[in-house]
Image (cartoon, rainbow, N blue to C red; front, side, top):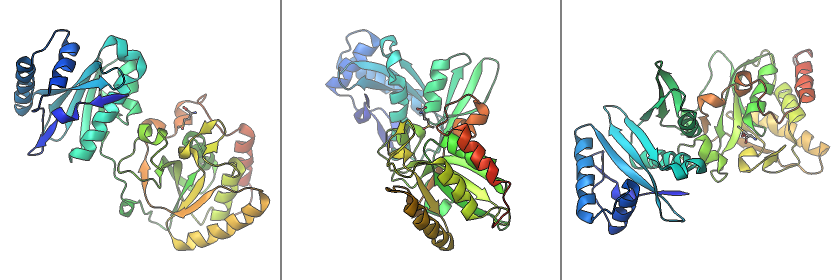
Length: 341
Ligand code: MHO
């Protein structure tokens, strides 16, 4: 696990400053640049970086391996007009240990908590699969590019419940957590009357979760699919039939091979009238099981997941899916039954 030299990083007038240098930073920076680094020289370097950043150029931030204390790499930061751009260099011996992933994770988290920056951009040379993985695992999305360069961007995530999408035209909305959301989304897209789906993180306790956060299992977020449906074409009862055909409600914080609180099953609703119908359905389901662990709650917040998770199994037909073909076929059968039947 890495640690940011957060003490060297200050916010002044909404700008990032690397103004303070401790003895400890000096040896880490020296180690990183491969030479002993006296405090004066470190300060000079940092001032130069600050001046560069002030001039709209770049600043840098070192990251250190917490257990060995060794400097692992440097993150460079460029201030831009409406965003911040980052780059990073990680020492070769740390490249195979997810350090860059951790470094970018910490930096994004730090910037989102300590500043009101809304967008972070990063460019990657085409073919640099390693960096593409680091960025996409941290919620960066591909924005375009040229023959040589790919442009990635991270957008500030909003989780305020008041921002929850409210469909119009009489369509309705519901969130279902059925374990890994790749398979759950596929299930609901089978059903006639489901107009739109979006995978994401539901009812958690942090401000701007990304996949990395949620995978750590301590945010309270569940992987879920947001379902927008036409109630004239499909009822809540049918949606719940599909849901219970595919989940195992007897286990907690787990579905199939996936274990962790992000895999907890649950149904989350917006309107109290839906809550009433759902409670009735849940009571009936409970009588079918010896143990019943599936949650039913009003929705508090929902954060759409990164683009690469959306319709994942369409993008990767042989990708991981915890729901079997037999279950998918049983869901497909529901389309043949009449609405309200
Ligand atoms: N077992 C899968 C789960 C992915 S899911 C989006 C994996 O570890 O990749 O949680």
